[in-house]
Length: 274
Image 1 (tube, rainbow, N blue to C red):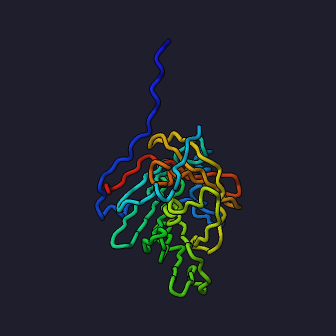
Image 2 (image 1 turned 135 degrees about the vertical axis):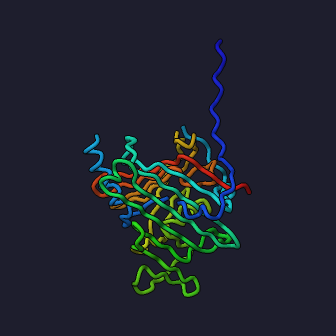
Image 3 (image 1 turned 30 degrees about the vertical axis):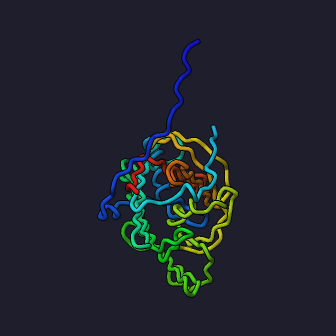
């Protein structure tokens, strides 16, 4: 009989040190219901497009498999829909030092879409690393350089302030729109679905996460065993967390009420050695 083909193996994440100054290079996170950060990008992509024309077992415990290294970066390609029409690039960059974390993100349009409408969206989340994971202190969104949204967390008073509005009650374990991407790996209950208190920069509320199951993805960064989650709503977000890459987000899909989608797929994952 002919020899059996050798099974495919997953690619190893590159372990390279990232210098401090690279923290300014960053990507946009998943968007949850009630947030329209990607509206301009999706609408620009729609115009440019018109003119141009086996599941595998999960680890026993997500928390045991998840520990964010001190420095890291995930690069993404940004597409309109699932047809591969590239409209931009994005990056997530994080640093952890002295019990504190800083995560930055950046998304910008490129190519034909940039000719119609240049969009640059930056986000920054800063806070404390605790035994339960990330505890954000402040979150800021900038669009084309101008501060558009922000949230400030006061864990002593247990309040959160959105923009210039009056403080409101803060829930234990609350996250912001950027930090939650990296917090999910610390939460074993995420595999059963959960409700997560979250500040988007426009409002604070409870967001439901549904579990759609385990999936194997073929991405530019390699073959990934992932957990597929969905946050339903008027604006729906789906995200895929990679089991073999510390539960980092490696694919993100945002669907707006008009049915337009914005998809980010990982092209490269860089992490500092432990």
